[in-house]
Length: 125
Image 1 (cartoon, rainbow, N blue to C red):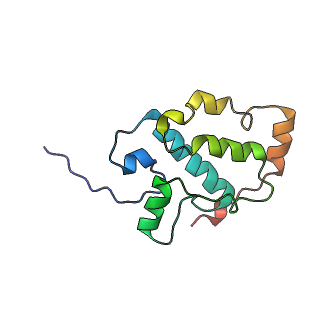
Image 2: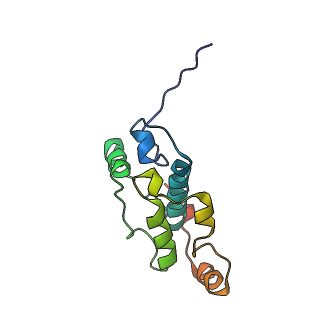
């Protein structure tokens, strides 16, 4: 039995290297994690363009805006996203690096900041 499939582009979770028809890496999943985190904080995809081609180019050239994030978004959260959204998969953090990032570490300071955070998941389009 031959397996066939159609890949519909652009999937907004897809890392740039996958769009280029290259091999996917474990850090390709980290990219997708970053897209989900951004979407929960902003209520929209970080790379969504005016059409599919524009979205694909935004992903390939890592074009996104922080203006869509709430003004209450912490600098730690923004740095976390900046760490993840790297075109070169070898420059992205591992899952262990992500878990150790200041934004995700459990301490009183970050817990209080997260309690004040605004998440727009209900606005997702």
